[in-house]
View 1 (cartoon, rainbow, N blue to C red):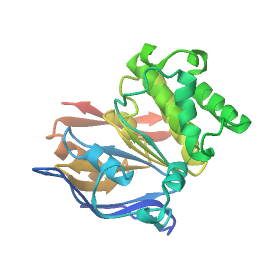
View 2 (spheres, rainbow, N blue to C red):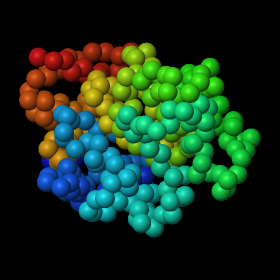
View 3 (cartoon, one colour):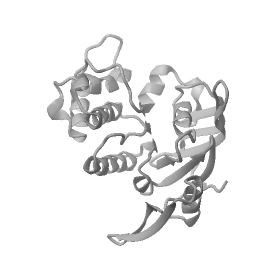
View 4 (cartoon, rainbow, N blue to C red):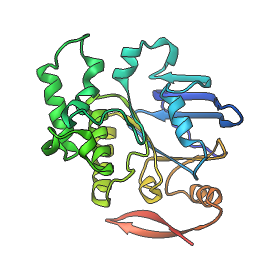
Length: 265
């Protein structure tokens, strides 16, 4: 496997020899990755490649073998509250909050910063307002989550994650059901996060959005088969290989920046 190495020693998140075992198969097989502060990594690969399993293991949401360190400190050395303040999770198809209002769902992102049973502070309220306005959901704040479409719901869950004001964001298919204009907005939000020093890993099926990331992790059959730059030829080769050589590549100029687009053959 080819890899890109960051020369800085300040990793936001690091995993070494990570494996996730299910009853009768290995979902993640001996994966080692590094995520730098201020970096956005797109995690891509075919269905069943182990992307979601890897992301959950990095978030501490599923049992795994191996070692994960967050901001240079072993995962086990963090208290649950500290971890929740530092790492924000956005899962796919999350359920169980349909009766809550949009505002209350976004406010859940502030729980790690609040004292036990304390009411939201003025700062909490301000942060939630900004988060909901950022994802253009402020006008729905009194509606219940169950009244929203899938794409609208996903934007509210993103607001909840943004309200954490974390240093690391792990997002599993954050664009599921989100229309194209709001996908472009999401890309802008991610760039704002990384410019502020946050690190982001996102599982994406939208391959051409993934190619706008800082780095691409390519998975297949539970293994990390490539870690590279989105415009690099070896990254394109790795993507073509895991998608059974059913991709073709086109170069285009984006305001003086050379970008690549993956098209189906």
